Image: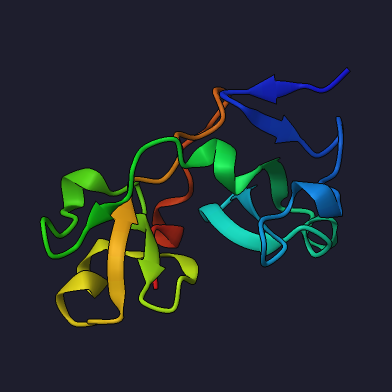
Length: 130
């Protein structure tokens, strides 16, 4: 049986497989100290701090917001001040909301998926986003 919380799948329940990755092989990972990250499905098991994973398509259930319509704000971001970004090259990343003010390659964004339901507040000194 697969243990899920808010759609996140616990690593002890099932590890991601190739079919779970997006076109680039990425999945969302819930890192114990850094929150939501993107990682290759086959790299997920190598980091013991990756506690949960989620298919990208399952975590992005809203239409992308064009940065030309509205740039993300702190209120749109997670506890680390991050959002999901899409670049003009169609690459997806997790980045700080403030990056949209200076990086014209970032064309669209969405809030990050909510944390697992058993989420614990990360350590204060780790609350940083690139």
